[in-house]
Image 1 (cartoon, rainbow, N blue to C red):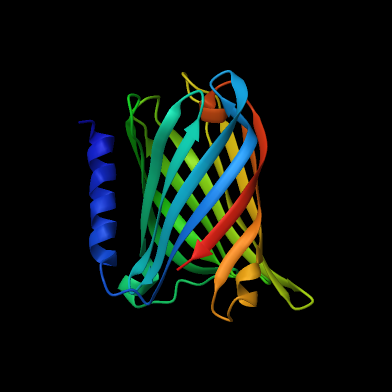
Image 2 (cartoon, rainbow, N blue to C red):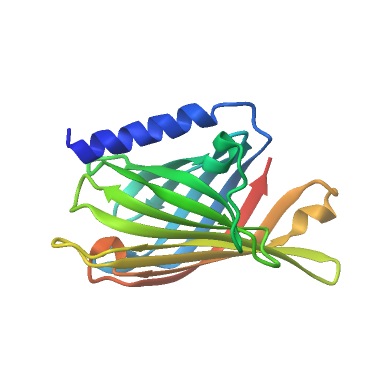
Length: 241
């Protein structure tokens, strides 16, 4: 095992240990997606995806994880997941690490993994900041060093955001992420900007029901560090438990 992989594993384990506590709040959801313009191998094709997501705010940090189960007629069924524990330096030090829009500084880690014949494990570790931005429900910036199993190690920046708004009496939410990673000897720099545009139809069932209908728009340049670009819009349905 490489030294960087040992360091990444230790960072993940440390963050997970410190964040283990009864959640201050937590959320679990299931999403269904269907699109017809996914760039798969060397051609475009249709794909269905079921995504399971869990997120929690903890005393000493936060935790986010998701698993995608995809099906397409090129690669069949595949599973990809990420687990991202973060450790709040403000919470463990008892100090407010605030400056301008920055409201906290965190140790940020992520474990990326894929299953199947071409399975892999990537370990990312670095620093993150939570931001206070008007009209945003949340906003994060995370900077990582990535210890990659299948290609050269690189660096990654991840932005995460959520913006709720109303049109009349209807509730909407725009949320998503942007991943940008550096080019290395064996792969190009890539950028994946994925946003979900959602309408909460669930409030018409009951005030506490969160059932969203909408679309996911994914713009992925140099997908997986290759020459292929993806620009795909998928139909979306999402339910929060």
